[in-house]
Length: 307
Image (cartoon, rainbow, N blue to C red; front, side, top):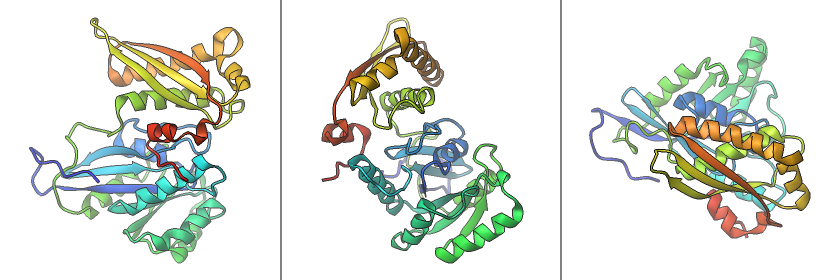
């Protein structure tokens, strides 16, 4: 955990880490972005998009809430899966509070049910957050709330829509009051602890997934290899998209390079908006067989390499 920051922050401050755990595609990253007020975690319709822990920082009155967006928890099949699930549970056990996010449309089944059954090993105070409630009838929500609270001990239940923001204000109010008293961990204007090089790589990965959701397997990885601030105020960024087979490289490049150009344009636009400066983005595609078994790639992603 980070050491509290000393300095000019409001009196009687509160601060702490709030971990979000849930099944893949429950809406954790969308909710973190909503609560922080800006994009700090990438969002796609591809499951297990979040791979490592991402911290988003929200200031709410005298409280600084550090949201820990964890990878979705599911039954792991590969080494990368095991690393992500271990990271998610570790993020929950290191936090001050834990928010358990349930997709109200899907209800309690599969991975969501397994998570609720495993919460006995998490001693931190927990709150239940039902997401996508705008798509479910009120009577179904009441049944879902009762069923979840029978399986685990929650201090509060919140019904929200991460997409529209409904219910998020009440959740922020409760978290701000519930966190322990103490100095803030980060400067007031900081919204994430993710290095910009890594966030830029994540944004490109998001655009890659959005463009090639059906065609590209989950096993692709992006690294920012060069970052050069130019004299004219612009920045030159070089990134490598790693795939495991030549056939995947062909898919990423597309016919006459059309696909990778579209991915690059979308990523460059968003990175430039975040940096508030002109971005020159250059993407390269390389084949690295079995990169999912390379410990160095796990360190790059902030994951512990499972034996």
